[in-house]
Every structure is written in C-alpha cells, then in structure tokens.
Image (cartoon, rainbow, N blue to C red):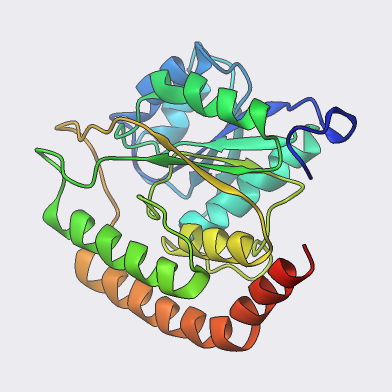
Length: 250
C-alpha cells in the first residue's frame, strides 16, 4: 500500500492492548493515563496472582479485560489482545507495557505516524542509555538490534520495545510466534521479511521504583540467542530471497 494513495487509505481505529502479569502497583496508572488519550483499552491479565483482577474490577476507567487462568507469557497475551481488538472492529493495536516504563503521553506522536502511514508498524524507540535502565536490558537490546540487522538488512534503534502500533491487517508472524518475551522480536522480523514498513518514533522511558519486570536476564538472553540462531537460518532460505525478489519486482 502506498501511504500517499488516498484510494487505498483506511481510517484507522485504534485500540490499546496492555498485557500484564503481577503489575498491580503500576497497571492502573498506565490505564488511566492511556485512557486520557485513547478510550478503547484491552487489558490482558496473563494469570496474575496479585491484586490485578481485583483492581481491574474496581477500576473507574472502562476497560475490556481478557483473563487467563495461568501465566502463559507475553507472546500469548499479545495474541489474545490482538484477537480481542479484531473482534471489536479495530484496525490497529497500540501496545504498552504495564510496568510503567512507557509514557502514554508519547502516544500522540505514534498515532500521528500511524495515521500518516496506516500500513506501517510503528516502533517506539527508547534511548538505549538511561540513568536507571538495567544493564542487562541495554545489552540485550544492542544484541537484538545487531542480529535484526543481519536477518533483515534493516536498522532499528530499538527492537525490544513494547510500545508499538501494529496494523492488524498487515501483521505477519503472529501464527507461529513464541509465547514468551521474544515474541515481539519475531513479529518485527516476520513483518520486515513481508515488506511491512517499520517506522521508529522516538519515545521516553522510565523505570519507576515499584516497577515489576519479568525480564530474566540469563534465561531470556538464552532464549533470544536461540531465537536469533533460528531466524538467521530461516533468513538464508526464506527472508533474504524474499526480500531480494521483492526489490527486483519493484
């Protein structure tokens, strides 16, 4: 789709999708601030064992809640959120983490970019160096960025961010993505191979004192490493040839 072709333009309908697992200390603040800018919100409670369900039930902000009986991972939660957004007739899913690291106040810039190019996947790009960013996160992001460049030939400043806008009709890789943290990387790589435009938009980041993170530096780094090994092999037999063929046929 040419973003400048008015005949092919769609009028985006945006829905926020917020996956959460034991983020009772920050979730409602994220929901409240998001609702001030985007009224339609789906919260996917991925088997939380804290007060998350209780707080959502008492929330004064209207949200649609999708609940899981057990924790199945962020990839699974995103898939459930996308399903619910499609059922509601939404064209785009705006994803935010529930741990308070994202600024919902940055959403207008991302939404404007999505309205300008509705077929693009908008990627919120955080600074890789932040005064209280965990060192493991910084290393994992740089590591992921490098292998993303190898696998796709594209440069993105932040391949690990959870603040994104997915065009649901253009989304690629959803069927086979893993259920855990690394699923977001899979979605980027599969979308890049399919020719979906990936547009980075600079955003802020914060790590509040009561933030609950489920990123496990050692285990998740090993999972990301294994995924990158697989993606590199798939890139050789599928991703690179498809990208080359698309360029030749332009």
